[in-house]
Structure formats: C-alpha cells, structure tokens
Image (cartoon, rainbow, N blue to C red; front, side, top):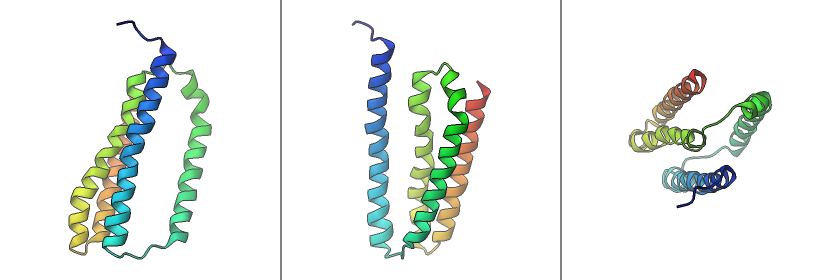
Amino acid sequence: MASKNKDEIRVSSAIFFVFHYGFFHFIYAMFLGVFLFEGAKLPVDFSTVLIMAVVFFINHLFSFIYNRDTELAKVQNIGKVVFSPYLRIIPMHLTIIFGMSLAIFGWLGTAVILFILLKTATDALMHIIEHTN
C-alpha cells in the first residue's frame, strides 16, 4: 500500500472528524431535544440560551485569536489533534446515563451540576495534557 502524503492525511482526517464528531453532536442534540424538552415538557427560555451561546462564542473567539499564532507554529500530531476532542464525549455520555436518572426523580439541578463537574474535570485534564508536551 502506498503511503499517503501529509496533505492527503490531513484532509482525510479532517473529513472523518467533521462527520464522525459532528454525528455524535447531532445525536446528542436530537436526544436532548426529544427527551428533555419534549418528554419532560421543560420550559425553555430561549433568550437565556441565546445569551449563553453568544458568551460561549465570544469566549472561544477570543481564545482562538489569542492562541492562533502559537498553535500554528507548533508541529502537531494529527492523531492527537483529531482524537483529543473525543474526551469531551465522556461527560456527555455520563450525564445522559446518570443525569437523566436524576432528572426522572426531579433532581434536574443535580444533573446540571453533575455535567458541570464532569466537563470541568475533563477540561482540566485536557489542559494538563496539552501543556505537558
């Protein structure tokens, strides 16, 4: 089998990542939309969701601009770049498994706290891994 050049590997890895990781998030969105909002009939304050989305976007835009030159100067391992975001799937899985059980018993706030704690732990671990190399 002929070896692929670096550009082909980058492109095929990016395409794989967009569809595979995007599919995970599409399924999560469907799951949350159907089970949480439709099944539980929870009220949704879309103005609050919009504000949180804008703050999230601004935070990540700032981080992107601030770190862009440093990240571009690094020699990246394509496997690490493509697969490290999958660690963020773990808090979502655990929140769906355990958080939905908590929500069924009326402890939705506890489920949200569970997600925040799991996500924070994952982000801290990712930060440590990223900055030890």
